[in-house]
Length: 176
Image 1 (tube, one colour):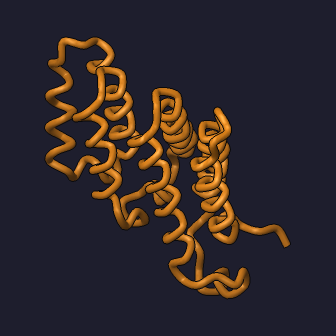
Image 2 (tube, rainbow, N blue to C red):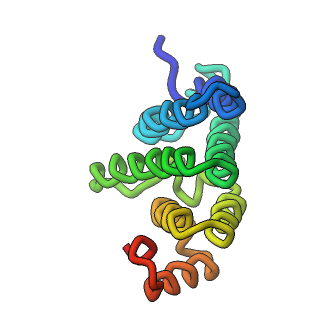
Image 3 (spheres, helix red, strand yellow):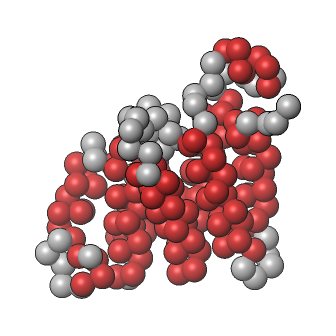
C-alpha cells in the first residue's frame, strides 16, 4: 500500500530540518526546494477521515502538526537565511499557488488554508520581521509570501497596511 503524504510528514519535516542545519554549501536551498513538490502532493490529497488515520496508524491531528512544523521551518529559513534561501522559500510557495490556481473548480482546503494552519499569526510575524529589517529585495520577497498566504494574511490589518503602503513605494521591485 502506498503511503500518503500525511504518513510521510514526520520524515519530510526531519529531512527539511537536517537540510537546513547542514553546513554543506547549498544544502539548505536544496532541502527547501525538495519540500515544494511534496507540499503540492499533500495539497492534492483530500483531508483524512478517522478510517484513514486508523489505516495508516496516525494520530488524529498529527498531519496538521507536521504541516505546521514544516511551514514554520520554512518561515524561519526565510527569516534567518540569505538571498538564495529566501528566494527558494518564495519559489516553493509560488509553485504551490500556481498548482492551487490550476484546480479552481473546488474551494481551497489545502495545507495553507486558514482552517488548517494553526499558527498563521506566527508565520506572518516571522515574515514581517524580514520586511521591516531587510533591504528592498527582502521586502519584495516578503510581500510575495504575504500574497501566497492570502487565505490567512488578508485578515491581518498589519499585513493589509504593509501591502497598501508598499504600493506607493519609490522602489519598483516592491510595487511590482
